[in-house]
Picture 1 (cartoon, helix red, strand yellow):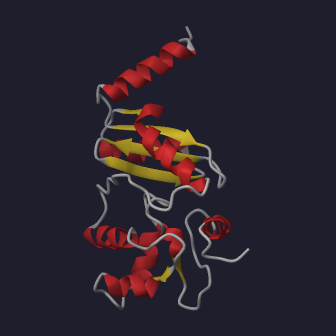
Picture 2 (tube, one colour):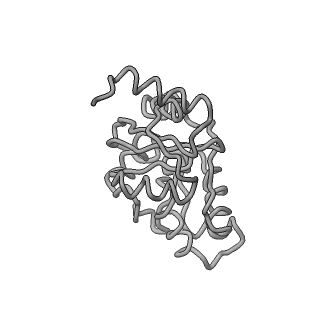
Amino acid sequence: MTVPAHLDRRFRDAAAAARLLDAGYDLVDTPVGPLLVAATDEGIVRISYDADPGAELEWLARIAGPRVLRAPRSVGDARRQLDEYFEGRREAFELDVDLRGTAPFAERVLRELALVPYGRTTTYGALAAQVGEPQAARAVGTVMNRNPVPIVLPCHRVIGASGSLVGYGGGLARKEQLLRLEGALLA
């Protein structure tokens, strides 16, 4: 038996509204491709490029709890703000971020990363120095590669000391596209 789409949508919306989910997610279409966006009651917990849904849902269940459901309402605010960002109408996200499961060093780095302004870049070494670990540029690179909430936590704004675009979990083409969108790179 197949459940009609309108009933399925009502069920998912009701579960999200009643806060019966540990995490809700949806796929969001963007100019850099579809993103899997997931949220908990604490905030956005995951944004993933080229997501393997099975692996992502397992990760969400391990991090947030077993009640994970595709529920567009859960990520509605994130979807709206991502749309505004890609339309050039938003320079800063006003979203809570849930970094549960993140190691203390990585959390410090990601919190500092959130302060890198729109249209600007920093280096791995500079970010390491800002968190009090000036010799930890490589470790900062690892944190950037494992950033659970790219775009909102703008790891695309971190470049190599030489000014080159090095490493990005979503691929260098996406990193370049995001930096061009922000005016950090000339066309």
